[in-house]
Length: 247
Image 1 (cartoon, rainbow, N blue to C red):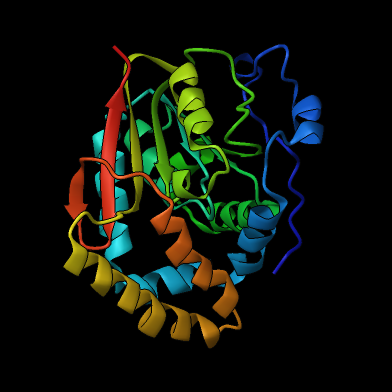
Image 2 (cartoon, one colour; image 1 turned 90 degrees about the horizontal axis):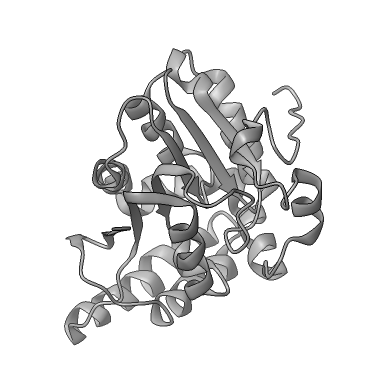
């Protein structure tokens, strides 16, 4: 596989960046990023997609299509995928907005972004050329206010160190009247569902991850769900989607 060189911002339109948050300033600050969580996602990057397919029996792809659909992204839009990982949501957004639109994928893991960039180069779909990859912090997005027509965030809000700040940043860069769609695991309010979920993590998820040498990394999943928010959304097995809108 060829070596990819990923700059902090790849060909991103300068009009989307706020003057006070130049690429280089933003890259140095990494405000409030958890070094441990950043290291965790860098370690799992090489097997992240395979594990998602295996552990969800492919259902995560259905959930991601739901999230993109709920975002309201349409042809010609400028859209943002926060905590983009290896790019699944960004690729789906690209298909929605077409060549007339622009997609920016932001993640704090350089390893994940390298994989996303590699996947982009391997695919022949023309619209994927409208995707840019940015190494950045979800708690300090380097964009001016009211920039984006739609925002998605898949399996990211649960993992940031300051969830309130992350949501504030989403609202700050989202245009009035537009939507953000957030996909993550649900902390069930039903005791029996919670017991089943914990059993699955302990007896299926962690053992499978152990085969990849990532047992400790996936044990973190249980505690991150327990600490997570509970909201009203469209339930879909172990995943859920909710959307918010600026009026």
